[in-house]
Every structure is written in structure tokens, then in C-alpha cells.
Image 1: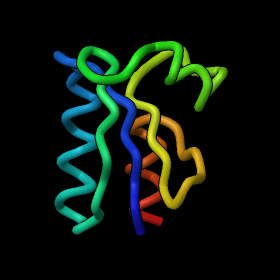
Image 2: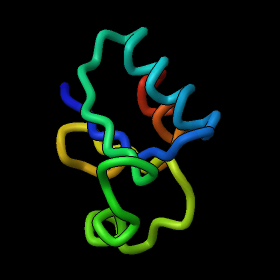
Image 3: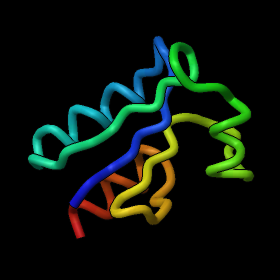
Length: 74
């Protein structure tokens, strides 16, 4: 399983999502809109995005941290 985490600096849910993925041994690519990525690129990937993080597992949008936690504990 591979994940993509769209995040931003100073985002506690982003930090929690990355920690959860690490604890589950899931590799992830971070796309930080405060650094190397733009909000426009985020909106191309997730047109309905209004909050961060936005998380993909195996190229399928899961949603935010709450949805990720639910998915990984099913």
C-alpha cells in the first residue's frame, strides 16, 4: 500500500495522519502546499478539497485524517 498526503505546515491533523501511516508501516509521499506544491495542484487532484490533509491510498482518495483512521481500523 502506498499513500499520498497533501498537507501544509502547522497542521495537527496532517501530522497525525503521517504518524498513523508510519505506525502502520505504510510508505507515503508528502505533498506540502506550504513548500513545494501549490494549492492549485491540490485542487487539480481533489477539486472538492476545503481542508487538509487530503489523503490517497493506492491512488484512491480516502479523505482526511478521520477517514484515514477509520479506513485503517476497519
